[in-house]
Length: 153
Image (cartoon, rainbow, N blue to C red):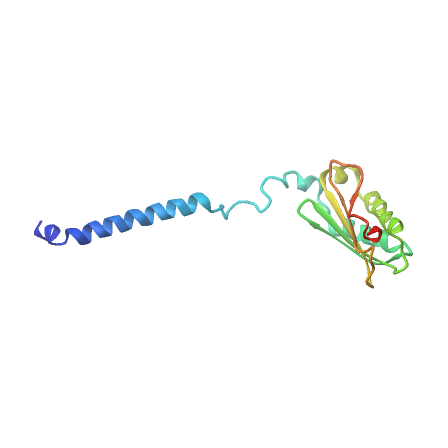
């Protein structure tokens, strides 16, 4: 008992320190995200039923490359977004380039169109005022939304 009386300041300091550490840990765990959860949460629920494989992505690329205005095309999937990057000939007009979006949609089934968002990025190899253009189609919409035409500025 005499040890406690002699060192009561040290014991109180250690007790206060322990309480502060416990409170700091609780606050940190309350405000920090849980690292164990899925990256996209439950937004990817059901993706197994309409999963796009490499064969389907290659089909999209090859369909685009068949067009004479297309120099190169790549397709990939990130979560629920089908990302397509197309490089077109330098003399290609904006409206002609935008028509490539229908080829991308034609390569997808109705079920895939209703599940995935589609983003198409169309660029040229040289600098142009009206390129690059980006089109985005939400899975609930039927048409693409395009970036503002830069040539009109």
